[in-house]
Every structure is written in C-alpha cells, then in structure tokens.
Image 1 (tube, rainbow, N blue to C red):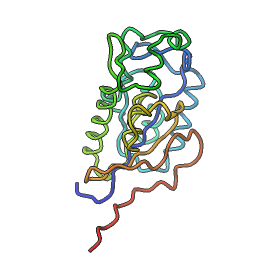
Image 2 (image 1 turned 90 degrees about the vertical axis):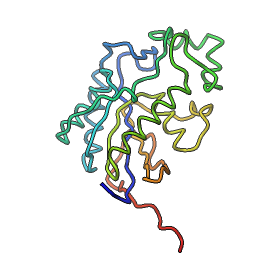
Image 3 (image 1 turned 180 degrees about the vertical axis):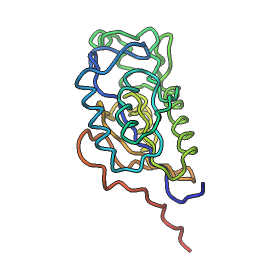
Length: 218
C-alpha cells in the first residue's frame, strides 16, 4: 500500500491494577486489572471509537491484554501480542515495593541517569528503549497510513515518547504516562516522527486526523 499519510500509533498504557504505584511488577504473570482498571479499559475503547483503527497490538501480559480487550471488541479486531511492547525486565527487582527501592543508592541513577542503569539480572533502560522503538517502527511499517492501537506499560511508553520528542533517555523520567492514557505518535514513510497528543486520560480524540507531510518547496 502506497500512501503519503503517516501511520498514527495510539500508545495506551494499561489500566490500574491492585498494585499500581506500590510494587514493581515487571513481567511476573498473574497480575490482572483492578475493578477501576476494567472501567478504564472500557473508557479507552469509548475514546477511540471515532478513529479508524485497523489493527491492535498488545504486550502479552494480562493487564495489557485486558485493557486492550474492549477496544478490540468495539472494532471487531483481534489484538495481536507483541513482545516488543513488554514491560521492562526488572530482573531481581521484580515484585519489590517501590518505597523500599527508593531507599537504595541505585535509585538515584534510575531517576537521574537511567541510560547508565541495568536492572540486576534484567534489562537496561537503553535496551528497553531500543526494543520498543524498534517494535513501533516495525508496526508502523506494516501499517502504512493506518491508525494502530498499541497497548503497553509506563516505562516503555515513556521511552518511546522521549525518542519521538528527541528527548535524551536520561530525561525520560520527566514524562508522565498515566494508567489508561492515550498518547499519539505520527510516523511518516520517510522515517520522521512527531508527537500529536500526549498523556490525556479524558477527553475526545475525534479531531485527530492523519495529515500528509508538507510538500517540499519547488
């Protein structure tokens, strides 16, 4: 398919779980949405219903699949699992309470110099950033000119937005991605990227329309 329109990637963080803001759950299985998170998932589907969504991708973890389910049902699509959208691999820190992690000297590096940090037994922030940026590039290439919903997790989405904004990874912690929020990245065929909409948990996305890149000067 040949098109001058960008691919719009709707980046959706999963809804709240019983441990949101308390524990670093990572990739541990068995964490489901809380009742409030299920309600947020329904609101996401309602927000996106006026957009011409043609495909849905999700991290394979339960909380993201459950967030994507109402949107997939609304559009009559099957959500495809994509490992590139997985949560960061927190290694030995998986399952730890955030209040305890914040007491560690390494926590300052996590917050201020994340590009220099690797989770013990897990992934580095740099690897996480490269992973999700590569995944979104591949998804955009597979859906030129389309609108695609991608359900993922806070840190990977923050890294993807930092990359799209041209912000250094060491500043990505300044980006806040709320549960069940929708951010929008436009990816053009020439590889250029723009952020159209960020971090809003309420409100309409009806006015969002793909736009062709400006014509080059003669």
